[in-house]
Length: 275
Image (tube, rainbow, N blue to C red; front, top):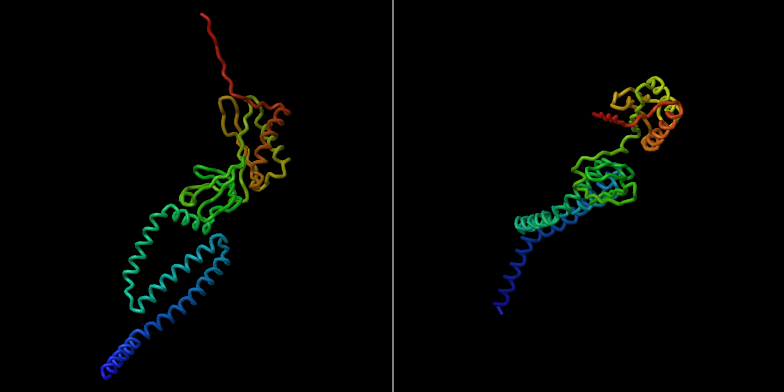
């Protein structure tokens, strides 16, 4: 009977020692976990509101909020297990190795994800813009986190991975509200340059889509083999670029025929000598 009482006393003392040793650590870890999750929630919500104020693309905002929340929770979890007394070094090493393996396996996907984040943050183009990349041209139909979709004038759909798109040069033809129409108009040798300039100005003044500021520019650019070439530079709204370019070509052809100005074409004289 005395042995049982002694064993019970020893177990009670061991239990009390364990409670004194681990109790404060466990309680502190639980409180840290609860408070940490509460603070992380506040930080993620604040981050989301900040992105909304800065007009960050709606398709990017959830990804960034989830990414921030996951990183903060992993850091909190590592801190909590360290407070309990569990060796966190091995856990961090395993987590790092797993992350490296996943990163190598998803290298292309992660590159496209990073490219999508860069495009949505920097916004080198937006939906509706006409862009020209080293391999493709078209109107931006949609910008996703992993790829960008273009529509060509003949209604083809082109899907471009964001990784390559973010790291390559591109031309955005819709970035500026105005564009310059460049035309080359050739007239025959012997035709009046003054009459040619007056005829071109008449056509320009008759088109309300052509802007007066900056002023239209007309000059003799080249004395070519078969023609005297005029350079014509016109400023228009970006949406009027192609209509004005096509219309001016047609109007120049019809008007020059009407006023007697010749539009020459390349010719070659062949001389045959008989012996």
